[in-house]
Amino acid sequence: QVQLVESGGGLVQAGGSLRLSCAASGRAFGNYAMGWFRQAPGQVRDFVAAITWSGLITYYADSVKGRFTISRDNTKNTLYLQMNSQKPEDTAVYYCAANRAQRNIKLGPSYDDWGQGTQVTVSS
Image (cartoon, rainbow, N blue to C red):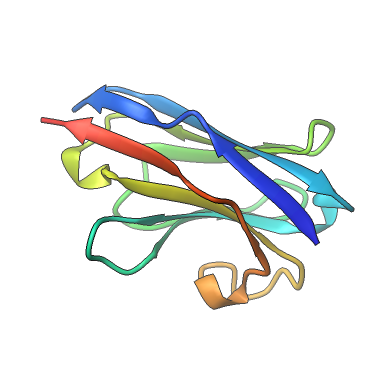
């Protein structure tokens, strides 16, 4: 099991940028695929981005492709999400999650461990 703590959320104007971090503790962070998901009020939790254990392969939802970048530093046990050119529809609670099996990494139920989330609000 890995414990995950997100940080870096906040209020930003449309067109602005934020960088989220997800600090992991526990065993073998480098063995997990990692993902970011988000949930807006009244909505289901949606896939945002994911990254393989090595960091060499990344995946993005169409809605964030070209604007968001997922990355990881296995030496620091930390996952990142750089969010640029933000839009009001990016407003949500953002969660990081760990996937031990490293399969179906665009699907929330495939993830084993979740953080508590960090709020991102984009004003128009």
